[in-house]
Length: 228
Image: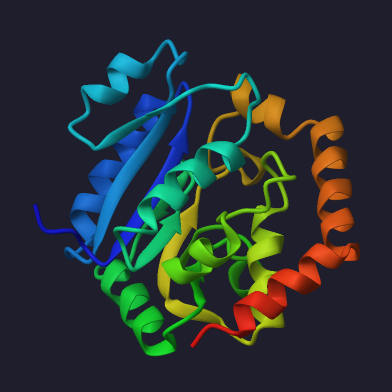
């Protein structure tokens, strides 16, 4: 099977219906430049439902820690050796622009090294909640999202790293809607509540600030600036 240029990784848990909705929209808007990979924990009781959707599913060995970061990093590091570009969607993102995949792939090809994102109709240019990046970034850092985080502030990291190396590109004509319940575009469920409670927000906020304040962020920027 011929691989596309971009692999979009979608971590999910307990929401096969959300992935089914995403898949339906994907089939209407993608033009062949991106493959879709859904990553599900091996202890997810809804795993059989995901596997019945007709989408590529990677089963992740659960660590018991909830959040996208361990799942996303494991899949992205593996994919970075096979795909020139990797991306992330939440299972609540919905691409609305026909050809969004080719537009992001073309942008990254032009940049050679970089991070690109579209308009999520929530944070817009301010924050890349759905993102695509060249795989050399993942190979260089050994991760797609800072591993000290669990779930939140990942998009802040992508924005700040991209800005620091001068390789962040906003593509406003590409709409990838973020259908989050916080703005009434989805329903709150147990996982949303668990991952967005005050304690988890504070933990990831502090962990990200510690990363920014440490020498690790500076070292990562230096590494990325050496890429072509």
